[in-house]
Image 1 (cartoon, rainbow, N blue to C red):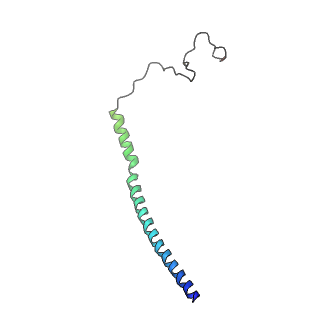
Image 2 (cartoon, helix red, strand yellow):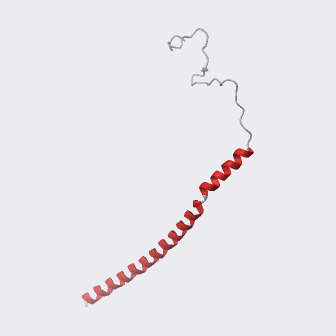
Image 3 (cartoon, rainbow, N blue to C red):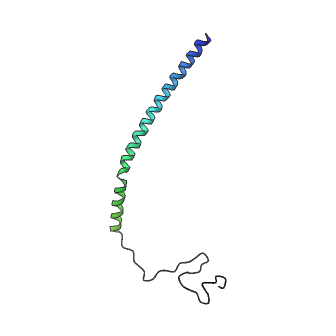
Length: 95
């Protein structure tokens, strides 16, 4: 009798596993379909990005060019691009 109960329990377990597997397979099929649809939608994205960039570059004004480059400010607050009076560039301690 115990053997028949064990076989019955194992059969029930396998039936549940088969049902869960069917549910999982259906879920994976839906996800695959969604991923394929997304891939098709994104396939044209590079062309759309290029078109938007071209449209934007035609509509935006051209940046003005400066006659000379601007000086930059380093962390210490000192401006680079010009030599300050009384400083030697080779000796950072002298200033």
